Every structure is written in structure tokens, then in C-alpha cells.
Amino acid sequence: METRRRPIGRARALALLAVLAVVAGVLAPSASAQDAPAAPKTPAEERASRILEETLALAPTDQPPSPDDVFVAVVAARKAVGEAAVARLGAQQRSQQADADALTAAVALAKARDREDAATATRDDDKATLASERELLSDLTVRAYVTGDDLSLDEYRALVHGDTTDPARGRTIMFEQVLHRQEQVTEAARVALEKARKALATAKAARVRAQDGASLASLAAATRAREKSDAEAAHLGAQVDLQQASDRLRSGRVAGMVPEGVALIGLPRLSAEDLAGWFATSPYSPRVTTPIADYARWFIAEGNQEGIRGDIAFAQAVLETGGFANNDSVSANNFSGIGHCDLCPSGWTFPTPELGVRAQIQLLKSYAIRKPEYVSPLVDKRLRGPAGCCATWGDLTTVWATDPGYGPKVMLIYTSMVQYALGRRAAGQGFDDPVATID
Image (tube, rainbow, N blue to C red; front, side, top):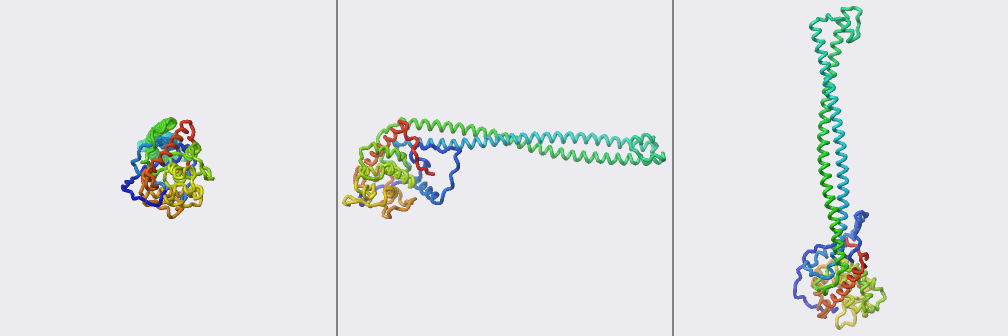
């Protein structure tokens, strides 16, 4: 890379991109729907998530088809399976709850009907009792009017016990007592009937409410059952889609090169294991003492953090350093010619290999975005590219470096990596590669 910059002759129209939340490293096992909920994010994690989301939203929407699209298809399908599993579990739980609510409502309705039946029976009994007592009171009143109290002492004695020492006086006393008693009994029967009627009205109202509740609960249970069935079907469909996407990935082969029009902004499609494994099969002989597997992990992790394609940045580093073998990579932890112009003896020096990787990702971000915000502090405050000059890897040609074939060379190396990764998947490998989690 040289420090001299050439002006860019065309503007880039950047639009919002629908971002996949899980893409780094392909085919990581999706979380179970029954996993424990994630712990709340810290302010730093919230900030990192915001920056990543805002960065990914700036990627061009007109991305060309690419041989590595099959990796994204599987990741998207796996994510869909996880979401469908969560939705299915939720629908099953809601359906079970609705069934329980419907059963509770049915039991409540049955009890309300029993209470209404009991109240009706009590009302009918009290109604019959009042009618009987009123009839007796009426009969006594008529007999008193007709006989003028001249009734048989034995007849009154049969009704009540009273003082009969004086038959005449006894008849009067006993007759008055009988009338008074019957009036009391009749009034008590009337009060009891009124109470029974009110109780029956209350029981009827409760039964109506219980019946309405049971109807609504039954309807809700039927609705939840349909939702559960739909969620189960969606989950099964997502599993089929995942299997089909996995089958395509297993049998995929690169048809041509990965195009230069691929955006700098994005999440890696290959895993660190893919990068390190490819390098191990390559003819390169690194001179660095740090294991290449560590570089692969750093490129993926830093790319995930900042929203820059770390897998392609690894290919760029291979091109710039001749496979981590030039003096900049060995003595300066500089893996992309940062600050190394055509006439400069060396590029900038960074404290550690990991910070050298971070510097490359941060500088790429400054090329892709006019006013970038970084998750980590800048490794070097001089890491400022021609802001927003380069939306795609092809745009780096004659800008990051003067080589007119710069972009194609980077993509040729990356295409070889994709071919290797596809070969791994075809052999059933790499499906459980660990990945960085991006929320």
C-alpha cells in the first residue's frame, strides 16, 4: 500500500441493508429454544451492537451473486430454524395454557349450573311452602269468620297447645295464637321465597358469565391450537429449507471467481478454521512466529466487531505480505502495507500482531464509510483513509495500492479460500466450527 492517494471518479450510493444477525463463520449450531435467556448487555456491549448494526446498514444493496452465497444461505436457514423453534415452543406453551384455561372455564360453568339448579330447587320448594302456608292461613281466617270462634277445642288443641282450663277462654286464646303463628309462618315463608329468588337470579347471572367465559376460552383454545399447528409446520418447513441449503453447500463448487463488486462492509462468510486450513494447504511459507490460526481468528473477530469482511481482509493480508513472510509482517506487525509507499523502506509499526490486524480492519472501515465509528479505539490516529471512497473490494484498486490488478488479485486468493471451504463442507467438515456471536 502507498501513502499517495488517487481521487475517486464516481460516487457510491449507499442504502440500508437488511442485516443478518448471525453470519460469522457459517453453520454454527443454533441456540435451543429452551436455552437460558442471555444476560443483559453491558453499556459497552450495547454500544458495540449499535455500531455494528449502523455499519452493516451502510453496505450497498446491489451486491452481485457470488460463489460464497451458499454459506450465507445456510446461516440464514439455520437462523430461521432457531427462530421457528422459539416460535413453535411459544405457540405450544400458549396452546397448553389456553387448553388449561378452557378446562378451568368449563369446570366453572359446570359448578355455576349446579348452583343455579340448586337455587331453582330451593326457590320451587320455598314457593310451594309459601303457597301451602298461605292456604292454611286463608282457611283459618275463613273458618274464624264463619264460626265466630265457636270451634271444637280438640281442633285447636291439634294445632297448638294452650291453656284450656276455661274452655271458652281457651278457645279464644288458642285461636288467636293459631292465627298469629300462621301469620308468622306465612311471612317467614314469603321472606324465604324472596331470598331464594334473589339467590336464583344471582346464580343465573353467574351461570351466564361462566357460559360466556367458557365460550371465549374454547374459542381462544381453538385459535391457539391453529397457531400451534402453523408454528409446527413452519418449524418443519424451516428444517427442510436448512437441509436443502446444507445439501447445496455440501455439493457446491465455485463457478468462477468471487466478484470484485463484493462490499467491504459485511460479516465474514468463512470461519477462522476455513482460513487457517486453507493457508495450511497453500504454498506459502510464513516467517512470523505467531500461529496462522491466531491471525485467522483475529481477522474474523475484528471483522465481526467492526462490520468489515474479515475473511476477505485475510486474503488481502496474504497478498500484501506474501503469506505473512515480508519484513513488515515480521518486524512491524503490519499485514497490509499500511504506510508503505512505493519508495518507502517500510510501513508503520504496530505493537502486537493482533493490533496489526485491528489496524487493517479499522483502515478498511475508513475507506468504506465517510464518517466511521469504531468499537475499539484507533490503533493509530493516522489510520484515516480517503473517507468513503471504496464501497467494494474492487474499488481498492489503484487506491489502497497502485497495482491495477490489486482488486482481482485479492479476490483470486479469496476465491481459492471459498473453494477450500466448500470442499470441507462437501466432506462433512466445518459444520460445527466455532463462531463469534453477533447479537
